[in-house]
Amino acid sequence: MSALSELYKEIALCEDCELARHRTKVVPGEGSEDADILFIGEAPGWHEDQQGRPFVGPAGHFLDELLHSIGLTRDDAYIANVIKCRPPTNRDPLPSEMIACRKWLDRQIELIRPKMIVTLGRYSLAQFFPGSSIGKVHGTARKKDGIIHFAMYHPAAALHQQSLRKTIQEDMLKIPLLLAQAEEVEEVKEEHKPEQLSMF
Ligand code: SF4
Image (cartoon, rainbow, N blue to C red):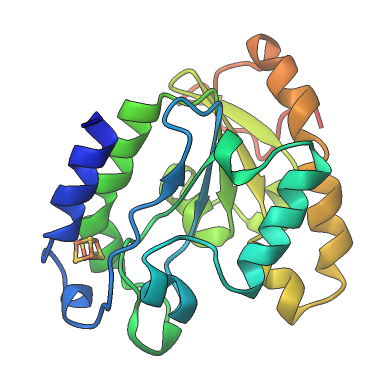
């Protein structure tokens, strides 16, 4: 059994925050274990909670479209969320829940070792760059700990706000070139954290 499969078993038993009481199934994540790109959303919704799989509702269908637009399928990438259990009534995750669940995401990153992390939405962005504004940094990349971090709006944003659909599609199209030029992206210095890189 792979290290990621072992990790799923641990996550399935986790009761480290209140959300354990509300879940139908945990949603650890899925995809290629040696994916170059790790997409990280916020938290499971109703569909995800029922199936135990990430991004299977309407926002997931849009994510599939976005992946296809750059020649990828789910099997080529890895898809996960910051929070592994659905918050009741799809409320925003609490800071304490984000902190409790972060260890699982860190383990996933360690095991997958992606070249690029694509944060989907402001909660995911805040995990890596607290204080950054998604409105300012979407479509831009920064390298941290040797991994390119690329910020995008959450696909669900396009469902609520049609005008963001094109923005999200355009941001997605930047990924292949960015990945190809990964070595050229400069590491973010702790003392100097620009809002965006010069590449895009
Ligand atoms: S949300 Fe995360 S920390 Fe909370 S019970 Fe689920 S797996 Fe554990």
